[in-house]
Amino acid sequence: MHENDAKANYKILEFHQPELSENEWNKISSLFKKYSEKDVLCEIKNHQLTLYLKSIDFGIFQNEIETLTQNGLANTAAGKLLKEILDKIASIKSYGIKGNKRVYVGYNDERKVKERKKKEQNREQFFYAQDHTFSTTNNALPDEYLNKIICGDSKSVLQKIPDNCIDIIFTSPPYNFGLEYNSNQDDHHWQSYFNQLFAIFDECIRVLKFGGRIVVNVQPLFSDYIPSHHLISNYFIGRKLIWKGEIIWEKNNYNCKYTAWGSWKSPSNPYLKYTWEFLEVFAKGTLKKEGKPEHADISAGEFKKWVLAEWKIAPERKMKEYGHPAMFPEELVARVLKLFSFENDIVLDPFNGAGTTTFVAKKLNRNFLGIDISEKYCQVAMDRLNATIA
Image 1 (tube, rainbow, N blue to C red):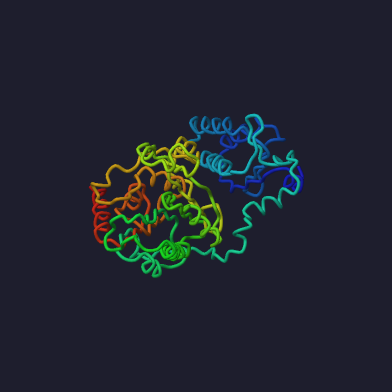
Image 2 (image 1 turned 120 degrees about the vertical axis):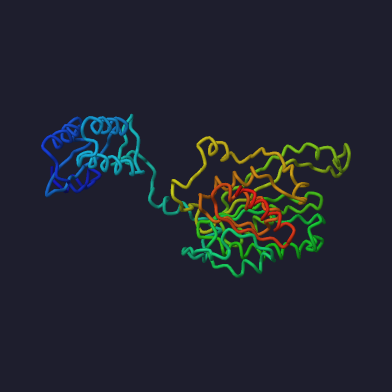
């Protein structure tokens, strides 16, 4: 076989050949002789083993290697070589499937998609985010902010943090319903409210890593006819973030269904009722987030269930226990963190409140930073974290 032909028609894997006994080499040769040269071919030259690979039934190949190692090749140079070959083939993530075989070369030849390469290059081009100026260089979060609850104004605290150092932000901004919330009353004018909120979100975008995600839990202000979920989404789109999706959090809170009707039995002005809230999901710079596969802790069952963007989760029942009027449940945070982040990622909640986000982050082996203006709620958040140590 000519070398040029091999390069054109096979995937080439090279291994340093250890010193093998004649018996060991015969066993390896016998293994590869079972396969057609059209699928796989093994050659040795200048102490180098070269594997020319086109297609293989990986399951059968794996079983045959395991059988060989169990029958005399375990802890031998030949056994180690076979394991190296197996691991290297297993590490190839790009292949097609034909019958029971993995096809490593030419598996896209039958595709009849015109300008495929151009489409792949443009796959992450979004007209509303094309002119972003985000740096692709990510930075470390300083130790004084790592795994901390900080009491203070979110904007002021975030301004001290470097660019591109947070993996995921999950938060729910305080509702402007006149809820009792320490001395920081939510009774200011709506325009002022959103101006202050977006100023904090500006800092959130800055500290978010390239490829990081921001997820905002928000309920439209139905009684005031303010579509806050749309206003927030439009803000992020205006800041060149990529809209990744919208999740409906169905709370099944049927008590709200019969409290007000608007114009009773009249189309004059009926009042629409809702039993759900929204989670608006955005990404910075790219939809793909980098992370080690072994740090993904979501199960197959969870993944298949949670990518359906309607989550039925009961509201938080412990708000009186923690003395907070507007908390989301731990299950909501767990789903967000497992679906959109990896273990060891850094989680930020700039409106941490009673600390549900930071509490769940710690339970799920994430690092965290929680910020809130209320000393009372910061203490509650720290008490919850300390309780996880026991």
